[in-house]
Amino acid sequence: MDHVWWGLGLLAVTLTTLGLARLARVPLGWLPFTAMLRAVVQLAVIALILRGVLAVPWTVALFVVLMLSTASWTAGGRISEIPRGRVYAVIGVLSGALVSLVLVFALRLVDFETRYVVAVAGIIVGNAMSAATLAGRNFVRDARARRDEVEAWLSLGATPAQAHDDIGREAAREALLPTLDQTRSTGLVTLPGAFVGALFGGASPFAAAQFQLVVLAGIALTMLTTAIVVTRLAGRSPYVFIAPAD
Image (cartoon, rainbow, N blue to C red; front, side, top):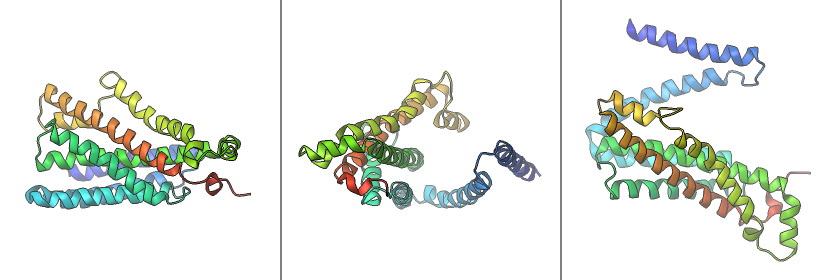
């Protein structure tokens, strides 16, 4: 009965979101409902998979590969306007995620145990995906808005990478700002998921805070690395390929 009531409550919150969007005429269609439905199905499947992963430690590597593949494919679809955008998304996500994960576990900031690998990798890879998407889309938007500036640099003999340098740096910065703002306000405005999850898991507030700080540091490094890689690679393409259609 408790599960039924929980399900009905979740449905009520989702339908409220859907109703509010329609009342305010925000063009989301059925997306709030379908997104939540998809999340329910996917999390149910992942919960079953994780039972096996946590029971057989070596399978965690396959699970991390699945996360990296899904994140790269999703981000690649979001920045497909950039020539070879899918390839750049793969390189960016892999670079950002692996740099942070290797450092976190090599420095023993988190114990190298199956449950921690899955937890940290899930957070890190998800943020690498977000960084690739945000940085790539910011890059395309700014390159189009500053097309005359880029054309001027190219006409003076600059390489595409030089012509897009400032645009790429600004796109990477913009991709990181929301995350850094959230990091600055942690504990004052928000209680992040890793901290709350660790508390629910029985950790002491101090241990939970340690884990959250490691996660925040890893996220910042991941997103910065991913954003830099994606924008630098995207900047090598001549501007004509990302100009808006006439």
